[in-house]
Image 1 (cartoon, helix red, strand yellow):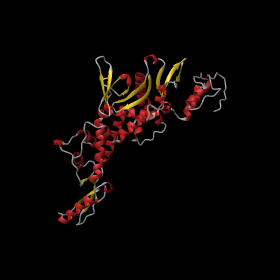
Image 2: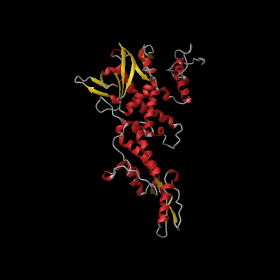
Image 3: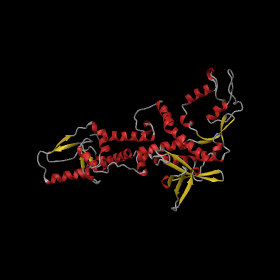
Image 4: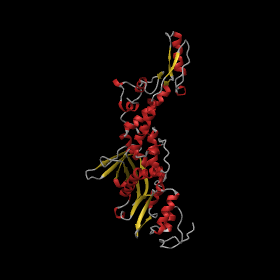
Length: 409
């Protein structure tokens, strides 16, 4: 049985309680005594708290990567007019989404927090504060304080426990609710809880490795004595093992002995790398749960070169784009009146994550402006705006075939 199979399978037989063992000696990761040593520790459970899960570096990396990526991208309130789409900067909702949703958070901090909640809890909530019909703030609420109920008329109510213990009831239009994958349509599923076994295995494998190096010994070989050790020899070996050779700094060292002992080194086997392989496999499983490509977890030795750009696009398209839709539609549902939904809509601007190399950008914009005899589909000022430059007096309109413009930066 491999070490990874052990972590997956077993509970200690007979309901054995966790206990700390010291002074164990192991010949390698295939030593049966090592499995028994691990078996005496806390074994994988079926539930994991959010705080415990975030102690695992793979879980923390996934949550931080996705939530920070969502946080760094702006959400703009857009308006359709005269066949084009423009930013509706005059609308009060624009500043809340793009810059500051409340009095103490930036837009980045608010989106990062909400996205973290929906990843680890399955849901994220923010109370929508209005003055008349005008939305003035989004107040994030800890998901653990919220209960979602569907009423007999199929409307949804949110019961939120306040700091003083009282409960406030809010209609759906007064709560911005982000749901993860759902089985009932009301609340989302927690990725932490659904992947509890994998996360627990990862936590336990880390603890097992720590216990091995803290309490166990990985000696470099065994000692064969020609006869029976006397009391003094036994005492010397005991002190040598427990006081000199325990701990990671002494792994693989030999025991200094006397009385004609013969030293014999242990042969290392391929199984000596099983713990490392098991932990790497768990990182990959956790990354899969959160939709993060393996190279972004820092577990690959392969140099991806230009291929990392395609992996980044893959991450945006399949790992982040569904969350873009979830955010945009949740904002539309709760913040934009039915009468305005044909003209007003929120839009994530993911261009920064999809932006290629300077060479790729130059080639794309050249074609967009009509290079190579192609029909242009972008104006000069549109290109300038997309790269952070202001409009130019001569940059309006599409460039005609054969036309040359000298538009200085």
